[in-house]
Length: 259
Image (cartoon, rainbow, N blue to C red; front, side, top):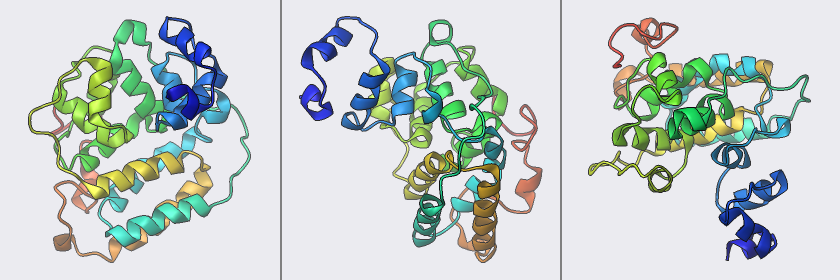
């Protein structure tokens, strides 16, 4: 039973099932039993994410549109090495409370807001989510930054295809998100993508880094990526010289990105 796995009183859990708001202590206890990050469970419960569970440094997220395209191109053993490198970095103290770019209200925007808060705030992606989505969907979800924001604001439809691709990036099974949203998954779901799964794991780990630490990680990823010829990379969307001028970089509505 969930109450036993989470080591919480059954009556407290039953109260939540009956409509009571869960306490922060209960949410933190339930998260590992549900195989969820605690910060994501707070978002799903419609509660503010505590400072201690938020990313360390909002400015570190500015470098993610460099890190993701480089790491997605690396072979499996180098991706694993990068992940372990990040985990081995020391934890720097939090200088100030994390100031997310924006928190969306699920009561106004529906489940798109939940997805947006997990993606843009919990993973410190803010304006870099479009690049990460394009990379981790191998080009299937190549949309503008403004489209991601509109999904989060409930102004653009969270379609089955988009839900499936977003699930890969936030590392939550698409079936679980479908059950929460009532959105039927597409008949043809995205193929297994170990590189995308590794990048999703890395995105979660780097959220605890400072901007200075992130620069070191990005430099290492860039050096490894440079050793790989472009024609040796089987990805539809990755960091090449032409990618530096992609409409997804710093131009939310430009170029080929779909609405």
